[in-house]
Image (cartoon, rainbow, N blue to C red):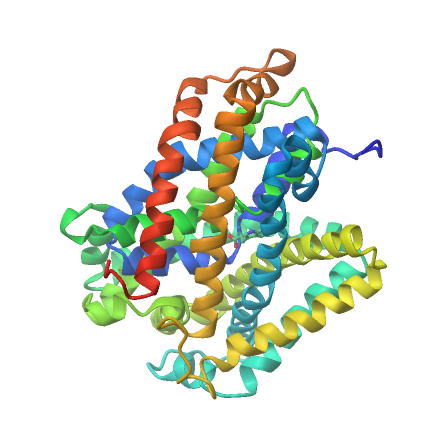
Length: 453
Ligand code: TRP
C-alpha cells in the first residue's frame, strides 16, 4: 500500500489517457449497430440521458474511490468494506472475458484493413463478403491470432507508450475521416436522409425495455465502467485535478466519437437497403457490411477506406493493450506470476476463448446457448450481467456504506468544484440502483426466455 504510484502530469494527461483507453471498438463498431437495432433516435436519446446521469455518477464514484484509496479495484473494494470484496473479484473477471472476443473483432478490422490496402474494395462491397469471411473456419482465426499477437508483444515489451503516442495523433484524423464519410453519405447518397431522420429523431414507437438494457450495457462498455479500470486510473490521478471536469471531458470525447460513428453508418444502411428491418438489425456485422459499400462508390474510396481502417485498428489496439495489461497485472499481483509468464498465460487463454467465439460463426454456428452465439454470449455475460452487478455494488457501497459525501469531499479537494453533487447523490443512491436492478432482472429473464422484451 505504501508503494509510490506514478501519476499523470496534469488534467490533460489524465483525460487523454482515460479517453484513449475508452475510445475503441465500443464507439465505432458496437454503438452504431446497437443504435440501428434498438430504435435509432430513441436509443440515442436514452444513451445520452443515461450518460449524463448514470454514467457521470458512476465514473465520478470510481475515479474518486481510486484516488482516495490509491489502490486498484480488487484491493480497493475490499479495503473500503470487506462485504464488497466480491465486486473486486468480478471486476477482475470481466477483462478476462472481454479481451478474447474484443481481439476477434480486432482481427476482422485487420482483415478489412489489408483488404483495402490491396485494393479489394469492390469484392468487399459485395453483400455476401462479410458472412462468407466469418463463416470460414480458419481465416478469421489467423487474423485474430495476428491481432492478439501484436497486442501481447506490445504488452510484453512494454512499448505501450509508443503505440499510445502514435494513436494520440491518429485520433483527430479518425474524427475528421468520420465526419468526411458522414457528409459524403448524407449529401450524396440517395435515401441517406431517411437514415439521418431515423438516427436523430426519437420515435417512441421503437422504444422497448431492450432499448434501455442495450443502452446501459453500451454505456459500461464504451466508457470502460464497472470493471475497475477507472478506479485504477483514479489511483494515478493527482489530488489537485478536478474529477468532475475530467469526467465531463472524457464523456464528451467518448460520446462524441460514438455519435459520429452512428452518423456515418446508419444513413449509409438506409441508402443501401432502404432501411429494411433486417439490415438495421444485423448486429455485429453492420459496420463491416456497410462501410465497404460506401467506399466502393465514394471518390478516392480505397484510400479513404484504408486510412479509416488504419485508424480503427489503432483505436482497437490501444484498447486491447489496455485490456490485456489489466489482466496481466491482476495475474502478477494475485498469482505472483512473472510478467512474461503472465503475458504468455493470458495469450494462450485468450487464443482458446477467442477461437471459441470465432468458431461460433463457422463450424459451431449451430451451437446456441440461451439463444446466442458464443461471441454474443460472452458479450452478454460481461456487459449485461457482470457489469451491472459491479455497478450495483458500487452504488450501494458509495451510496449507503461510505455515503456520497466521501466522493464529494474527494472531488472538492484543493478547492475544486463539484457542481452536480446533488444530482450525483440522488442518482448513486436511488435512481441508478433501481435502473440496474430492473435491467439485470429483465435481461436475465429475457435470456432464459421467461419474458420477451
Ligand atoms: N471502452 C473500450 C471501447 O470502447 C472497451 C473497453 C471496455 C476497455 N473496458 C475497457 C478498454 C478497459 C480498455 C480497458 O472499445
